[in-house]
Image (cartoon, rainbow, N blue to C red; front, side, top):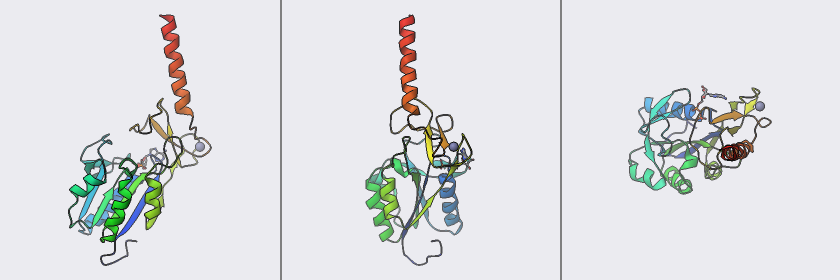
Length: 205
Ligand code: ADP
Ligand code: ZN
């Protein structure tokens, strides 16, 4: 896709589980665009402020500047009309309106590079990633390495007790798992255990 010339816009999507190198890949592509002196703007969800508010930080400590936003309207408000390349990390947190928005940007001649989780902690499609994949010109699926057995990992295993769709966290709260080792019910089992412990403690008092 990088060989394309002129003002034709397009949408690239990088998706996969946590720890699969999505942010690294996003940073690599955007850095190259910056080296080539293209005008680049990068956005990330405001809820993901694990490491820095004004940077995307990969699990390997790769970094690039980024602006925090909550949805497509905020991206639009911060977007400079002269920007040629737009990077978006953790797109699964930015809402459905991103889909039409990035299509409009591509139609205007912009290159959009999007990274995001394709599935949630239960292995279900994480919206709006499926829709973004559908409108993309180019798709890259990244895999991690299963922390249990070393096979290619396509799942994000939640290790803590929570049934919320969004629990922002990194190592210790999540790990990469292959199809065979993925235990979608683990979070529910942990909640059950926690409740039982609370009950035992309450009875013991
Ligand atoms: P993502 O954006 O997909 O969560 P990152 O680009 O932030 O991934 O981080 C990728 C890095 O995470 C790898 O280069 C490696 O250093 C680290 N890492 C941690 N756990 C794993 C794993 N199970 N498999 C592969 N890489 C891992
Ligand atoms: Zn495994």
